[in-house]
Amino acid sequence: MNLSATVVLALTFVVVCSAHLTSFAVPRALRPIWRGATVRKRPHPHKVPSQQPQHRFRQPSAQGLMYTRLRASAKDVKLTNYYDNFYFGPITIGTPGKRFNVTFDTRSSAMWVPSILCPDCYNYHRYDNASSSTYKANGKAFTVAYDLGQVEGFWSQDSVTVAGFQVQDQIFGEAVVESDLFKDMTNDGILGLGIAQGNELSVFDNMVKQELLPAPVFSFYLNRFASNDRTSVLTLGGTNPDYYTGNFTFVDLALPNSWQFKIDRIQLSNRARVLNRNGHQAIADSSTSLIIGPLEEVHKLNTMLGGVPLLGHPKMFLLDCSKVDRLPDVEFIVNGQKLSLSSKDYVLKFPGKRRTLGLSSLVGKRWHEGETPVWYLGFTFMRTFYTQFDKGNNRIGFAKANH
Ligand SMILES: *[C@@H]1O[C@H](CO)[C@@H](O)[C@H](O)[C@H]1NC(C)=O
Ligand SMILES: *[C@@H]1O[C@H](CO)[C@@H](O)[C@H](O)[C@H]1NC(C)=O
Ligand SMILES: *[C@@H]1O[C@H](CO)[C@@H](O)[C@H](O)[C@H]1NC(C)=O
Image 1 (cartoon, rainbow, N blue to C red):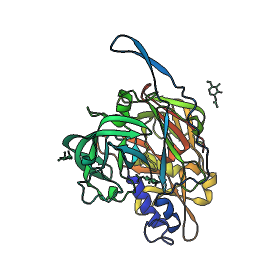
Image 2 (cartoon, helix red, strand yellow; image 1 turned 120 degrees about the horizontal axis):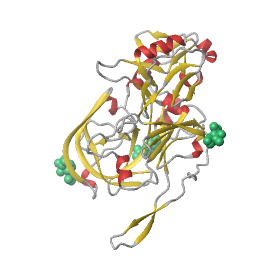
Image 3 (cartoon, helix red, strand yellow; image 1 turned 90 degrees about the vertical axis):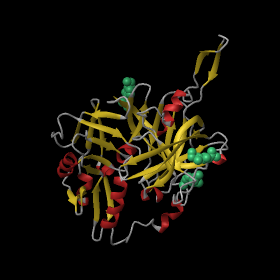
Image 4 (cartoon, rainbow, N blue to C red; image 1 turned 180 degrees about the horizontal axis):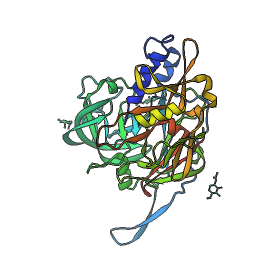
């Protein structure tokens, strides 16, 4: 999970829009949304995915008889878009189930929520192991570090239900100490949809292992805040054809335990010049707001777009708004197919003192010696492309999102 872009963006808001805002306070008109109303603007008759047939599988019983069990079809979790900064959706933990709102993060695999033992977790809900009959103690210490913050606490075990799929005995963290960043978030915790590296299985791994899903796949449709888009949706167990058009472009995973894949080239639609002949490593990242790439490459790309580094934030770039509509597409060549972002997708517009300012969604990050530089394709990318994460075939698929 990378929350740096979220925060940098918030800072930028202050810089760019200082004529209007003195701090990154939630604008008054939007507060009802922040308080919990849905961000959906127009009603949309939500269809249950029809593409996934209820398929049967056969399995020998203890007596050697054959029986069939009906597996569930794919199911949706509606996500709330918090000002394009992050998305969250409901889960329940324990028996009786207690509700939490969590961010679903494809870059990490651990799950945690604030513990009742955390005195200054100001989130909405805290987990109390005394009030769940399915709780099992573990008690080992955990720490999860993200780019801009970390949480500490102890592991516990309980049932976790997402979209009606109930995982038994899920290991998750009860957070006792949280970085300020998490205290200020309007959700309760993080549920990693990454592939676990150690023995502890992620919620998704367990859904697969416990044979809850019709297929070991999940998919995201992410909407744009302040638009007429439909509510964002995470589909577990398949894809939801209501939310994309055309065919998927598939690419194999580059590593066995990460949603990482190769981009052959990144280029602009009006130029032959290529950023890096060896291609790029990338992760489709459901909790990063922008697109984050190695600083040198991002600098080159933004310069090719006529951008200049933002004063005080040299990893971010301003673009000339008067030219925005004439800017070329940024093309990501994945498995030989072109995935294009138009300037509408990658330029963020802000009202400035005298004129509208354009901020590039392509943000730089410095990598340490020895680390493999990776592009985090955050919401800017995943809003444009409906993304399916397919563990069964070890691949990721992108199709044009149907907003
Ligand atoms: C989760 O967030 C939604 C949208 O803001 C809200 O309606 C709901 O009450 C929240 N649920 C919990 C358990 O806080
Ligand atoms: C909750 O977890 C903590 C830490 O493992 C433990 O000390 C406490 O006894 C647990 N509560 C119950 C009711 O088991
Ligand atoms: C999708 O794939 C099918 C089969 O390969 C092909 O016939 C069809 O033209 C493709 N559709 C689009 C929109 O590319």
